[in-house]
Every structure is written in structure tokens, then in C-alpha cells.
Length: 145
Image (cartoon, rainbow, N blue to C red):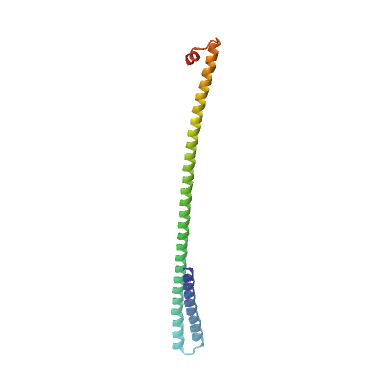
């Protein structure tokens, strides 16, 4: 596609140079011509060629401006896609982190419950020993044993 653009640019350049060359020739002819009618003809030719040159330059400018806009839009689209993809990746990572955190929380809760059971058993057996040894327990402790 780039090669096509280069060929297109060459065509525009050639057209513009060709017209500019004709303008120069016609200007020289107008200067070198003695006959008034011929001189007027060359001057008119210069004016119409200058108009053509203006149209060509404007066309070339509009074309390149249009291509730049397309290029900018293409780059913006690429950037937008990238941002979208990065955003999705970030959201995925957040979700993974949340899932990991929930799993970890569940594991910690399970460990905590196991420990609570162990501590309760230990405390119950300690209170039981104390009761056997004749130590007076408060109402709450006494009900546990």
C-alpha cells in the first residue's frame, strides 16, 4: 500500500512540475514575443496554467491531509484497542486477585476454626484438671466442664 502511495505522490509531483514548466515556458514566450496578440495569448495561457497549478496543489494538499487524518484515526483506533485490551487484562488480574484473596480468606477461616476447637479442648481439659484438684471455678467455667 505504501508503494502505491509513493507512486501516487510521484504522479502528483510530475503533474505539478509539468504545469510549472509550462508556466515558465509561456512566461518566457510572453516576454520574448513582439506581437501583441501572441503576447496576450501566452499571458492568458500563464493565467490558466497558474489556475491549474493551484487546483493541483490544492488537490495534492487535500489528499495528503485526508491521508494524515486516516493515519491519525488508524493510530487512535489502534491505541483505543490497546487501552481496551490492557483494561480487560487489568480487570482480569483484579478478578484473579479477588478470587485468590477469597480463597485465602476461606483457608484462614478454616485454620482459625480448627485452632478454636483445639483451644476449647485444651481449655476444657485444663478446667477439668483444676476442678479435680479442688480449685473453685466460676459459674461459667463450671458449666463448661
